[in-house]
Length: 299
Image (cartoon, rainbow, N blue to C red; front, side):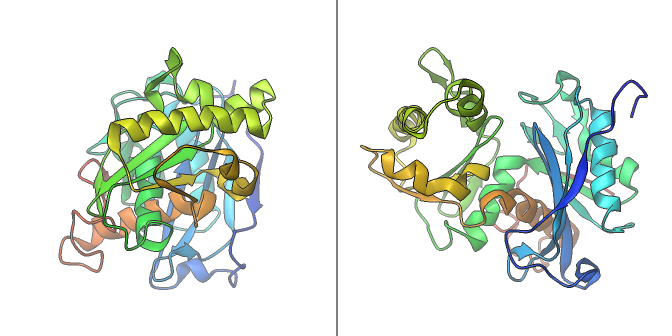
């Protein structure tokens, strides 16, 4: 990290599940997942049998500017907090990821575009790293352990936060890097109208924001005709404040069961699948439980 950057605040956060015994992340079957966001970077070891955090998650603020080197330093801080030396790590990124390279950077510094992020983080952390789109990771986790489990029709997970992420599944299989938050809505990118950042920045009431979300869901439903919308991101913890206000959507709408931990869980799942190989415990490489073709690893 350059000396001109101030160090972001860091702190452990309570997991949404009950706390596990200290050091449990080092037990067999646990894999570390890290979720990079526009405002924060959080991670924790994940119990991949239960699809739940194995320890309290640790979070740091995303540095500003959020350049690759500065963010890599913060990711290392998260990983080092768990003494996770040399073992596989899964990392999400808020943008398109193909083969471990980040292709877009809507809510982080533009210098991320065309960076081999898997290689950068692999070198910085000194361990195998698998990188994938943040919403894709959250979607994989929800389809395996959460609200999308056993659903075989078209399912769309939407994560509302600094922007709007999306993960689209049909027949249980992911269509990677859809980035539906950049669809045009009322003359603007949808995430510039209906993200939770917009709600907070403009002081929108729940009713006002729910109206914008409803307009966005109407547009996405017109394009994809899903049977289920799963609403994720931190705002999913407050789903009772806005979901009942959304009307006229034919698809079922439910909050994400893993809430804001879904990205961490999905990142860990991708890292396990990448190291296990096609015949390993992750199962079919094209299934929701395995990394997407867009994900990439560096050893």
